[in-house]
Length: 430
Ligand SMILES: Cc1cc2nc3c(=O)[nH]c(=O)nc-3n(C[C@H](O)[C@H](O)[C@H](O)COP(=O)(O)OP(=O)(O)OC[C@H]3O[C@@H](n4cnc5c(N)ncnc54)[C@H](O)[C@@H]3O)c2cc1C
Image (cartoon, rainbow, N blue to C red; front, top):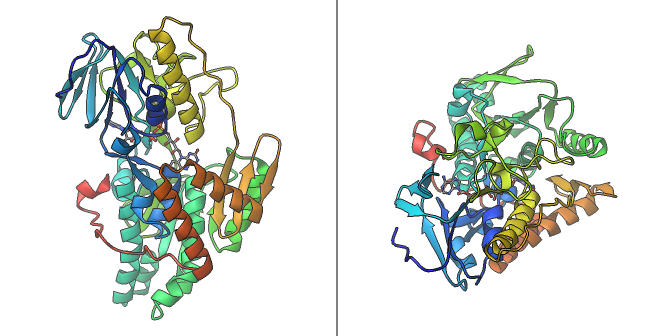
């Protein structure tokens, strides 16, 4: 991999997401050699992917070059590489660009869409976990309307204009709200010769409430907001199959649609090589101790979505969200320095800063530790928090300007089919 050997211990971090970048920051200019590997050369701000899918933001505004994050860091190396295997006996990792030795290894590979073994749904549905996937979805949504103009079959036209979203967590709720706003504000202007009143947005949830990780008040308010926008919510309903045309469920309601968005779950990104018995926590997460050390290993750590730290406060591990990933990354960065200086390590303590979701213009729900609120103020808080955590001044400016423009003009100008989506071309799936 052409990385020089030095007298400093080598820490290899796999993944430049929220957790990986936080660790790197903690190791800046310390007496270590750090090698950060990622299969993308950019960090993705996943919470705003749905805005890319719905033409509200350009993809570049939620991505940030990893090399730029590391630009003033001494003894840091970035390589664009896909890590395929860990050889724990040899302290080596295998990647698509060669092998690399490590003294300490940090796995920060995040999570991927979980289809719970349903191959048919995996093949035919749309995911929204990466920027390429979001661009695929954006293209498909727009292509559907272009196609709907061409057909004289009512049945086919309706299927093209039906959108089914599975999973009513923040991703599903935010996407449903954005689609409903497009239906109201954009489609009648862009497609005057289509009866866009027939567009339907269905949000399907297996449990008895949406946003189930949030308070009941937030769930109820989000449901009211969505219904006000015309979204049809199906609770206690589990999707069982989708052949590209019909969504089947465990109830007697099926849906004809050309677009099924699967936002119903994630699982840790597995890398071959860790002792299989260690990967036993639900959702393919790697069990770690309170220092993020992978159980059974002294020099391998896992952090963020891929790690499962079971504590008294979090018996199933911490939520797979940006805050735990960033906080664990920060703590692990400091602990690695302590470890190298032979100082005692600090256990991780999660500080829950709350959760939030936006449903659309002036509509959001926020749950904080001691205060819960919904509506316009919540929407401003949601925007402020997302701008604050975006990486890069330029990105913050671009997103802010876009939001102001979209708000004032009731518009989403990134509704472009730059790279057509071809369902049969599987390379476009990821
Ligand atoms: C659509 C969507 C909306 C979300 N909204 C919110 C929200 O509103 N609030 C919130 O707190 N959280 C939200 N999340 C969750 C949040 O984004 C994740 O919890 C967070 O990104 C986890 O950070 P991480 O560092 O563990 O992983 P990630 O940020 O996913 O980073 C993992 C990195 O590892 C790299 N990688 C993976 N496998 C390999 C490999 N084999 N080789 C090399 N590199 C690899 C990836 O390219 C990626 O850069 C959302 C997620 C999605 C998908």
